[in-house]
Amino acid sequence: MPHQKGIKTVAQNRKAFHDYFVEERYECGLELFGTEVKSMRAGKVSLKESWAAVRKGEVWVEGMHISPYDQGNQFNRDPLRPKRLLLHKSEIRKLDGMVARQGYTLVPLEVYLKDGRMKLQLGLCKGKQEHDKRESTAKRDAQREIQRALRNRQK
Image 1: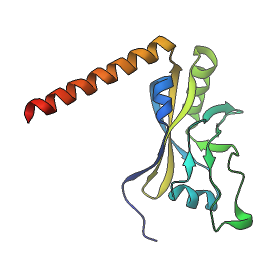
Image 2 (image 1 turned 180 degrees about the vertical axis):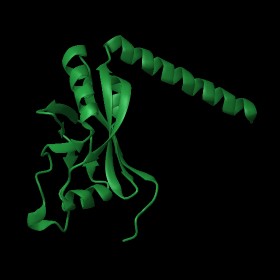
Image 3 (image 1 turned 45 degrees about the vertical axis):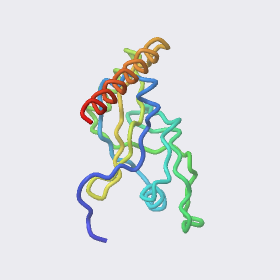
Image 4 (image 1 turned 90 degrees about the vertical axis):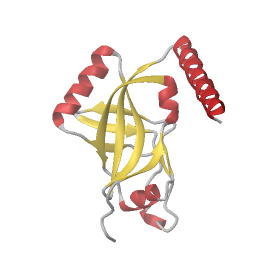
């Protein structure tokens, strides 16, 4: 199969933007098995309840559900097994320090294909309070109303 160029989004974690303030984003590689890659290319992945943690100098993503590949038979892995993320050592040290001392959380934001390889966008996030969630919802509704008024005015 020829090498595909460009970026194709496979899955997004929309709930993360509702629950967290995303401070920084990191692009990570994923350590996967063949049947997992095939299943992800088919879009059978969920980031809804996933998070990442730093353990023994490595970053692991937990709770990311990859459905078993249909033709995978005995080669399929556990759908919820922890998957190792591939980052530079300096990035891992920085993330570990931020999570340990300053109360940040590592949240997977998006899984995508970049030039034929699976990548995961990891966000360094701070949790939102209930009033922050209401405020962002109000801003989004106001922006939607403004766009609707502009569309109606142009007609």
